[in-house]
Figure 1 (spheres, rainbow, N blue to C red):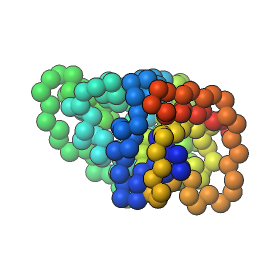
Figure 2: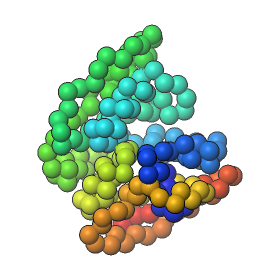
Figure 3: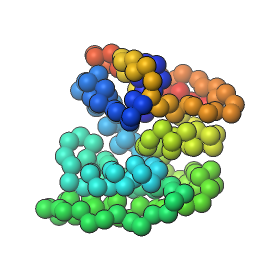
Figure 4: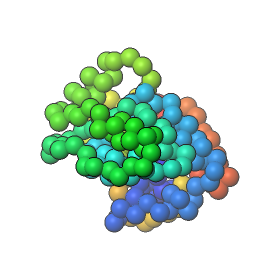
Amino acid sequence: MSVSLDGFVSGSNGQKDWVFKTGDEESLAWSVGKIREAGLIIMGRKTFETLAAYWPTATGPFAEPMNNIPKALFTKKGFKGIGPVDTTTAEQSSSVASWAEARVFDGDLAEGIRELKAGSGKPMVAIGGAGFMQSLIATGLIDEYLLAIHPVVLGSGLSIFTGLEIPVYLKLVDVKVFPKGVVAQTYRI
C-alpha cells in the first residue's frame, strides 16, 4: 500500500496522483515484483469493479500479473459480475476471463479470509481503498504489511489505520530505499 509521509493512502477526495509523482522505476519494479509473488489478489467490490474495467486492455508492467493472478472480491452489497470489455486480442480476451472467474465472498470478511488462508499456495495480496483495508486490518488476520512510504505530506486524507479498536504491534523485517525517496517497509505481526 502506498502511504504519504503523514500516513494517508489518498487525499481527502481520493486523489492518488502523488504516488506517480514521487515513485521511480526501481520502486515500480519492487511493487510489480511483490504483486507477482501473489497466488491470489483480494479486494473489495468497488476496487474490483474499477480494476476489472481497466486492466484487461491495459499495458505496462502491472498488466500481466493483474490479469493472470486469480482474484477474490469481498462485498456487503452484492455483485452482478463485470460488464463487457472491448478487447482486440486473444490475450485481452483471456484477461477478461481471469477477472470474470473471480471468487466472490458476500458474507463475513474474517470468515472468508480464514477460509482462503486455510488453503495452500503462494501468499495473498490485498489491493483496495481505505475502507476495505480498514475492514481487513480490523479482522486481525493480516500477517504482513508492505508499505511504500512516499516523500509527500498531504495534510489530510484517508488512512487505513483509522478506527483501530486496539493497537496493532508490528515487527519491521525489511527496508528498501529508492532513488526518489520512496521507502518500502515490510512489517510482520
